Image (cartoon, rainbow, N blue to C red; front, side, top):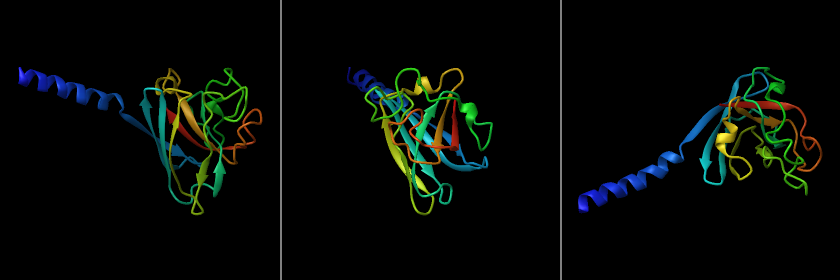
Length: 166
């Protein structure tokens, strides 16, 4: 009896770890070269986001960060094929917007003086299976800070980096 109970407990202990496996995706810069990586981990109530950028990849300061509706980063330097924000029809843009946020809205990414960044974020607005739907999604980094309220993208400016999530 003790042996079967121990085996059952091992299965219970190991099963949740597999459920929280992380997927990693390359982040491409304005010229299409790899500037970093994003790791996404599905959680029971959302998605854990771990971003690491190498030094010199972006200008220092705050940069808008959003999930976009298509995992297409093929138009290097523009990244317009990634479409609008995930769930843009479900609310108004901005984490501070009383009629928002959209599921693709995220806090700003803060880039250090050397152009590197490392952050671990959580969003309860979208789950990983929604990001990895039929056409995937993209993590987009914008040139400027997102003010979290202005329409349509919080004055975040051009798209300067893209990670295709599929």
